[in-house]
Length: 386
Ligand SMILES: Cc1cc2nc3c(=O)[nH]c(=O)nc-3n(C[C@H](O)[C@H](O)[C@H](O)COP(=O)(O)OP(=O)(O)OC[C@H]3O[C@@H](n4cnc5c(N)ncnc54)[C@H](O)[C@@H]3O)c2cc1C
Image 1 (cartoon, rainbow, N blue to C red):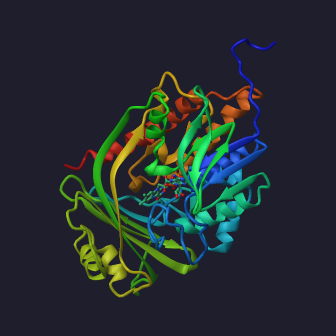
Image 2 (cartoon, protein in one colour):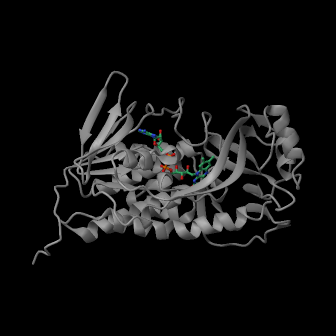
Image 3 (cartoon, rainbow, N blue to C red):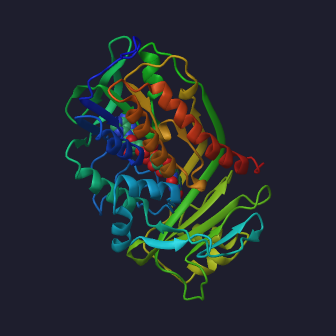
C-alpha cells in the first residue's frame, strides 16, 4: 500500500561536488543505488609526483594525518581488502596505546597493549588508494578541472548544477546532488541565491597553524616510540608537535600552535620552534635528521558548522556532508572518519527509503547527531586556551 505523501524518483544520476574523502565515499555508497554517479572535481587528478591542490594540507602533502579506527573500519567495509593492500604498499601499522609516546596536559600517557592497531600513512597515499578503488567502480565517473558554480532548481527541488570547465559553462541534471566541496563550500550562498532558507552557522575561531616537513631519516637516537605527540599544555603553553611514520620509510614532522603570532616561516625557524616546545623530544629526534621537504605552513582559522539539521524546510534533490557540513579542529583527526560515518549513514537512509525518495532532512538530522560529540570533544579541548 503506497502512502499518499510518499514520492518516488528515478535514481538515474547522482552528482557529487568535490572528489576528496567525503565525495569519494558518498560516490561509493551512491553507486549501489544510482545508475550513474558523477564526481565533479575542480582540481586535476593527482599523480604520485603532482599532488592535487585541494588536498587540505598543502602542496607537499607533508601534513601529519591520522585515520581513526572507526574510519579505517568503514573504509575496509566499503572497499574490502583496502587496509591490507595499503599495509603491503607502505602504510605503517601501530598500536596507538603502545607505540605512541604522547605528552598530554603536562604528563606522558601510560602505554599499554590495547590490541587495537591503526595504520599510518600520508594523506595523499590514503587518498590515492581510495581513488584507485573508486576508478574501478564502473558506474562512477570523475570529471576533473571542472568547478561547480551553482545549483539548478525547478523552484522546489535541486535539479542539478552549473559548472565551469577550462572552455565553457556547462549544466548537468541530476536526481540527487551531494555537496562535499569541503571548507570552502558555498552551499549556503547557492541556496540563498535560489530563494531557499539557509542554515545558521556556528563558528569558533582558534587561529591554529601547522608547520610541516618530511624527513628521510631522524637523528640517530634511541627511540621507544613509532609515533610521538607533544600536545600543547593549555592555557599557558599553546604550542606542540608530533612525528609519525609514513610510507616510503619516511617521517612526517608537524609543529602546531594556537594563537601564535609568528609561526615558523623557514627551516631554521622550524628547528627553533621545535627546540622551544615544552618537551625536547621532537627537537632531539630531528636536529640531526635528514629532511626531504622545506617548511610548509597551513593555517586553520576556525571550527565551523552549518546547522542544516535544524532547517524545517530544505529542497529535495540536495544533501550536504563532510567538511561542507561541519569542519572540526584537525588536531583531533576526526574529519575523515566523520566523512566515513556519514557515508554509512547515507547508505542506511537510502536502504531504508527503498524505492521512495530519501529525505535530505532525515539524512542531515542523522549526520548532525554524528558530528555533535566530536564537535564537543574538540571544542572542550580548544576552550582550555585563553
Ligand atoms: C591541516 C589539516 C589537517 C587534517 N588532519 C586530519 C587528520 O589527521 N585526520 C582526519 O581524519 N582528518 C583530518 N583533516 C580533515 C580532513 O582533511 C577532512 O575532514 C576530510 O578530507 C573530509 O573533507 P571533505 O572531503 O569534506 O573536504 P575536502 O577534503 O576539503 O575536499 C573538498 C574537495 O572539493 C573540491 N572542491 C572545492 N570546491 C569545489 C567546486 N566548487 N567544484 C568542484 N570541486 C570543488 C576540492 O578541490 C576538494 O577536492 C585535516 C584537515 C586539515 C585542513
